[in-house]
Each structure stands twice: as C-alpha cells, then as structure tokens.
Length: 488
Image (cartoon, rainbow, N blue to C red; front, side):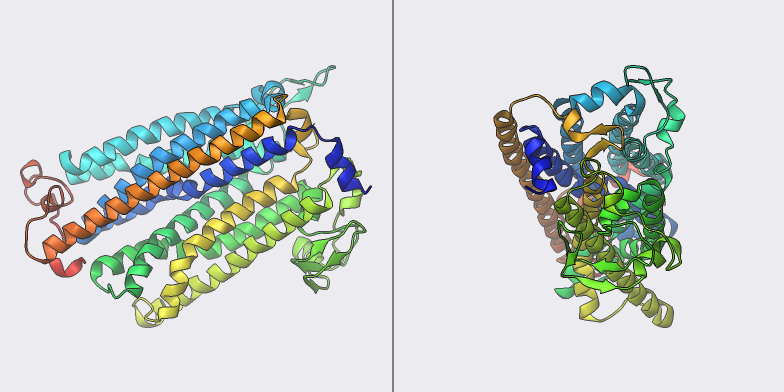
C-alpha cells in the first residue's frame, strides 16, 4: 500500500463528505463574488460618466447594472451565509480552538455585508427620489463596503495559510492573541490585492461579454458600444497589473509556504536548477508523466537564478504534505490559472493597441468572440486560484498547526452525504431562480427599448429616464432616456 492510500485510509469517514460539501458551496459562492466585489465600482464609473457628460445612455446602463447588482447581492448573501454556518458545523475543531484568533475576519465580513445591503438599498431608491449629484455621492461608499467584505474573508484565509498573532499554552491552546498580527499576516497583502484585482478583471470581462455577444449579433449601436467599452477597459487595464501581482504572490508562497509551492510546481526533491513542468502528473516515485518540461525555469521564476534552491515535497514527512493526487490537482489548477491569465493579457494588449492606433474599438469578430468568453474563463481562473490555495495547503487547515482531519465534525458520514445532496438541490433552485430573474430583466429592458425605438410609450420607470418621474427631479439635473437610435 503506497503512502497516499495509507493516509486516505487513516482519515475519518466524515472527512470526504465534509470536504466535498465545503468545496461545492465555496465553488458556487465564488461565482457570485466578482460581481459583488467589483460591479459597484464599475457601475459608479458608468454613473459618473453619465453625469459628467450628461450622457443618458450611460445613466441608463448604470441604472440597469445597479438592478443586477442588487439581485446578485441577494443571492450572494444566501450562499455566503451557508458558508459561514458550514465553518461551525463541518469544522468545529477549527472554530472551537482557533476562533478567538482569526474569527474577527468573519465578523468584519458580516458587518460589511450589512453595510453593503443598506447602501445598495439607498442607491436603488435614489434613482427615483434623489437629486443626481446627491444620489451619486451616496453611492460612493459602495465599493469600499465591498472591499471591506473581501478584507474580512481574506484576512481569515491568509491567517490559515500563515498563522500569526498568538502563542501556545502548555495544553497547546492559543494564548496571548494579538489581533493586528493575526489580521496582517505575511500572506495577507499578496492574497488580498491579488484577489481584489482578480474580482475587478472577472466582473469587467463578464459584463463586457454580454455586450460583446450583442455586437456579434449585429447590435452596433451606442448602447452596446458603451456597455462593452467601459467594463472591458477597466478589466484590460487591470489585467497586466494582475500578472505582476500573480508573480508576486507565487514568490510569497515560495518563501512562506515552500511545501505548497512544491505541490503547485510538482517538485519532489529539494534541489537547484529545477525544471518547470507545464501540466503533467506527479507519480508516487517522484517522476512527472506527461506535460511539457522546461529546464531551469522553476528556479529562474522562483529566485531569478538557475541556482535558486527550491524545496521539494520530500523535505517533510508524508503526513505533513499533500498527497501525490493533491499535488497534481494543485499543479493543474495553478497552470490553468496562469494559462488563462496569459491569454487575457494578450486580449488586453490587442484591445489597447487598436485603441492607441485608431482611437476606436476593435472591429474583428474574433476579438469579440474572445471577449464574449473572457468572463467565463476569468471565473474558471478564480476557481483554480482557490483550488491551488486550499489543496496545496493540505493536510493542514491551519498551516503547520492543525490538520484538516483534526478539525472535522463528528457527524456521521451518511448524514453529511444527505446534507450534501440537499444543498446541491437547493443551490440548483437558487441559481436557477437567479437566471430566471436576470432573463426577465433582460426581456423587460428589451421590450422597453423596442417601445422607445418605435416611438410608443414604454411602461414606467423606463419612460421617466434614469432618475424617475420628471416632476421629482429639478430641471437640468436629471437625464432623459437615450434616443431611439442609441438602444436596441
């Protein structure tokens, strides 16, 4: 029996269903996170453009995006709350022993959720009741509230990767907790900014992708051009920044979590002049089958020198490192993330070069086909980033302090599998409902646009313009609905 099989056989029966349930809910929730974190900023940029240039089309887009933002936030609160409960239900050992050290991150996130809910309600209400400048100013705290939520959850996760801010008493329990050190751990900065920029990129490409599809279907009006250009420009500017941040966080993992780095790069033995493997599968004897081998590259990327010493998986005992399968999963997730990031850099450069040379949007159908899928692939990259982070840390739930098996619930595995099945059914209903609501909004907006284009009155509030009834907005402060030629 090899080491991996032995480790799996010695794990508690409830560990697998607990992991699968947590992985499913986290992977589902993270689909919504980019829009929750970054859509408020993108919406306010469009809102500002509308006010600055008295652009009714921009105001209409901002108003519609704010409706999507509210619907997405409502669903995100549900899935995020489920995750919060799961930490206590599935991993009582973690929360019971370490909650006093890193639990403040979850508290910050909860307050941020509450604050963001209030601000979104005010922002939606303001379209019909507030003066334009007042409305916009009241919306400005929204991105900060979204970033505060990300701050809380990333503080907790970075602490799990590089735990600090405590000492252990004679019984092995945390004591002398220093909250500031527990929040601002060595991995917090790299993880936080890498995550925030990833959310901005993903949300920008996802929103732009909707209008890229419209362009491919022949909708070349100003409404679709502006709806594409603003979010895509934001994402395109952030993409090369993310490439630099990604390199920085990989180097931080190399220094702070060398065994995780070894798993992500499938390095078996500690050595210098280590090659880089693009994909491939780690075998139990330490060899890598398949993939593309690039000599010296791993050492060069880690320390800018072929003589850089890279720690291997065998530097620690088998029960303190990821299994061969887990290392392969982390490696593939990392490589897919880097591959997608590289492709997005090329897409952003394509967009930037066309704009610098011709001061217009690209005209190639292949560009818009690529842009239509950029959001989807960005979500895949985000999922892969979390997989690499969490799987690469195995078997630790708190790095070098508590194993996952020590934190798992004592609930029977059969009960956890039933819970897993119920959660899948509930999530299918939730995400199905989200899709139905978004499609209904799209249909309503298209019908309103068709009514306007035909010269007939649309149902309120579309006929009232971005700031509701004309009588509620002082003359010169509101914006009317876009001309018929500007919408489809």
